[in-house]
Length: 425
Image (tube, rainbow, N blue to C red; front, side, top):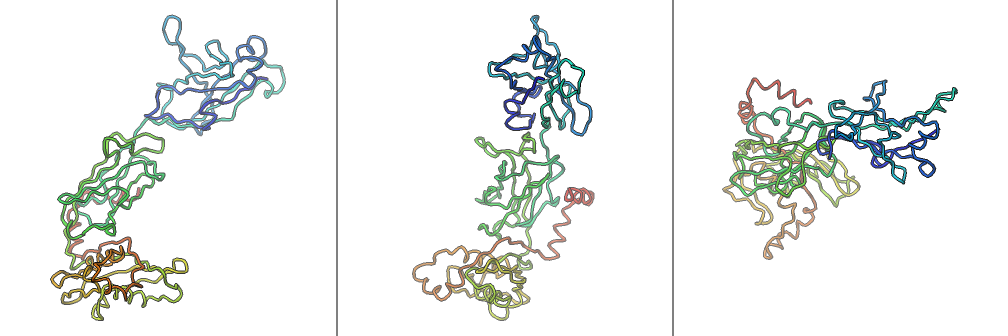
């Protein structure tokens, strides 16, 4: 009984993919190995032994019936003839190393989908069990996908103005390649400013059919300076020299970059709250209470007792043995505006500036970056050094109910159901 095996990339990868980047989208080159090539070639086995054919078979995944693959052979006249993909035929060329390569014709025969393939040797029957008259390789699976991904619907949310830190999501027609590092570029440009943010400076999530991102104010953006400003988003291949792109899971790149244009909502920061994660290090977890966390934040901001209700502290959680974490909410002042009395003039806020929640958060952010104070002010920070081992992250702005209502009015009522549907994909 004659045997055969896989060769080339099929042997190495144990799978195949035909996509829009394939060198030949109408054919797939199949390499088969003759393990007995040192004794006889397949054609010699046909002429001298029992071997009849070495055929490539295929079937769509989930189907029972196997079909014989076809190949196109050029005749002496120059015409193409459709023949069985028979690696023992006279039109098959076996090398001295026992490898035979033939093209499996796909165009106008197979539709896109997932397929299984196998190579089967067939011999003259001896009248015994079928096993002694044929041999089959292990089957391999692969995909034929010649459809590039496309954007599906509008970018989410549908409203024209979004909050800084609010997630923007693009939905696609099929699952996207989301392995890290991400294969695509993502850039945000805020008009009227010098802010150009790349994906390394953004919080980016890729999952299933969605790419989402949000601007994290902890990267150093001055929130007040961008309120009401328009911004543009580009996802895909950004820049002429970029090798990045959005690919589907079968390696097809998107045809055109995704572009989104929105603006930041011009909300009243004096009525807004901020919500963020506060992480304190170099402390004994077991001895750090919710009350101690509130005292820590208030001391950093030099707030007095009259502002105590503005700092709301979630349950303190241990991060290892020497760090703690809590979700902090800073709410608007209940009454008259006050200036801040900070321990360093470098971080201080003028009496004429507003001590709204975003400003307080930005103060914490700036302190946490450990900017070096001027030499003459260094002694003012000496007694506060133990405060500086902290960080803030995942900041969200929570606008007032009146601002939320104004933002929601920018959504077309006829599109509300469509928006909900996209969010649930």
